[in-house]
Image (tube, rainbow, N blue to C red; front, side, top):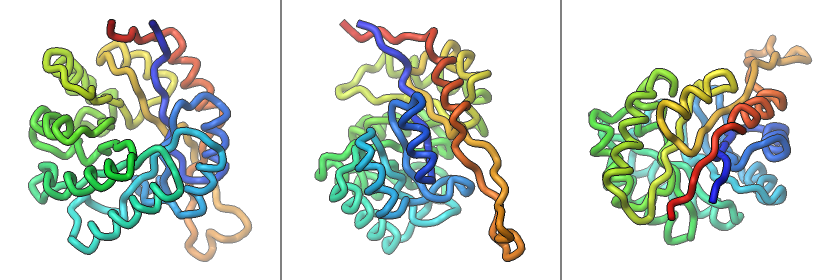
Length: 252
């Protein structure tokens, strides 16, 4: 049995949500403020995603900056997970680190267990890429039954981190676990390099924004409102087409 490589598109606007759903995405990561790495989306955005009926996981990140959170911020994230569950989206995207860069295992366990209790899927975001030992972090992610691990291979982009991503994939093949965690390559992925990334790592899922710069109009920039990025229909289409030659084979 064969299938295509899973393509997840991260979006932060209503327009981006509709473009990704219509032009080749298999799953959506829903955020606010992608220009600063993505924050928890609004209730309205989550409800729109639900109305479209497309597999969607919502970012749970209460502020920009690092992923070292206080107990107050943890409470906020648990409440936001409740909102995602109440709206009926597929899952959430979470992460938390200690000051050392290691995963904050107690906090992540609470986040994951809370999501699991609500029957939500869980993605561990690029807080993973800060860890000093990716195999130790991968083992923890497996132990708490995280569904998906988004990583650039502990590098600024996936193309630079192919060796680490390949190492993670090889480790999974030699240390099978149930349920099997999905390794998803992300950051800097586009139609021109995705083939190289897939070939050199063996990943079965990739993640990208497929966005381009958009200029603020109507004089808003005069008041300090910055330019932003917009999901580009052609970039989504091109990335989907670049993945067409690759197929995964289901385990027998």
